Length: 212
Image (cartoon, rainbow, N blue to C red; front, side, top):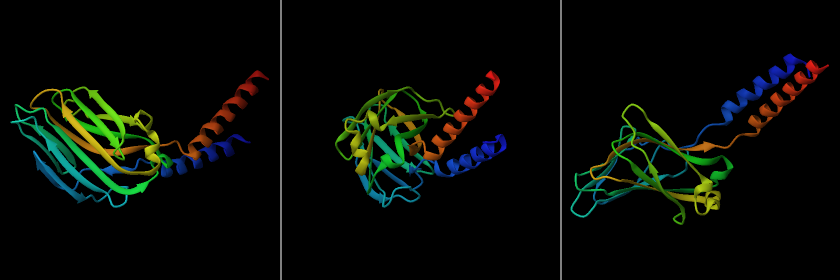
């Protein structure tokens, strides 16, 4: 294949790939909701890539303490009193969908955390991702954490997923943190694989030409 034609093919494939490969937004935390030491919800969540998504918040403080979780202006915020290392839960339910058809992982962006903290996820109520220990995050230096489906106790739950729960807790009292987005990590598309193959063919032909 002539060089220009192959370059044109790769460009076209790249444009299709850019359109096809995009993360599916689960929640950008734009719908106002809050609770302190109790449960709030479910509430309907707009702007999600999932159909009929609803969100329930649950804050469970250390006895005698206070844990608050609230959603406002694009942030999920967890706050604890000076004597609480409580757990904040965000539970989602939605129309069943095969996540494995378009993704292989979840990502959560942490905007700030004033201490080390832990995250657990539960898919369909039974498939567990054990608590992950994470470092503190300075304001202005957000951290994006990836959770592969393969890390869950039953990854096949993502083939027919209708609920997902996040559990967040600090390792110290008075832990506060902000999170900004929960989404999926897209699988490499067929077009992306075609691009990689085309580049490999080009590279191989160039090496042969040099050898001759």
